[in-house]
Image (cartoon, rainbow, N blue to C red; front, side):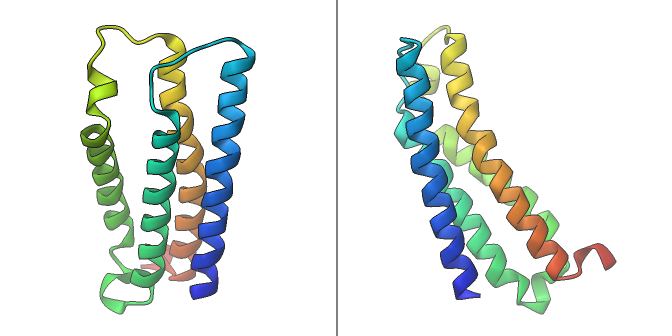
Length: 133
């Protein structure tokens, strides 16, 4: 189990740096400047997604929580959204109108990390036999 968690840490670290630098390259190549803390947004999603997946590895081995992992995941997504808004409320709400580039730059890391997070959670749920309960 520890090997899987370490592999996920490497995966999310790779997605963090590759995604951030690719995103920054595309913005610079098109001469688009945004006022969002892009690396902070990527770092938040990488750390929180890793934390969710690592926690689910440990909870999936506990009989008490094995049947409730789907509901726990929904709660963790809500918590992730609330914490994101609390941490980045300054850059998110200080301006009256965000440009299209800033809106897209906000959503790219969300969906990028959500994609890998969901794949890992599906594997964990499948391993615990969640679909049979």
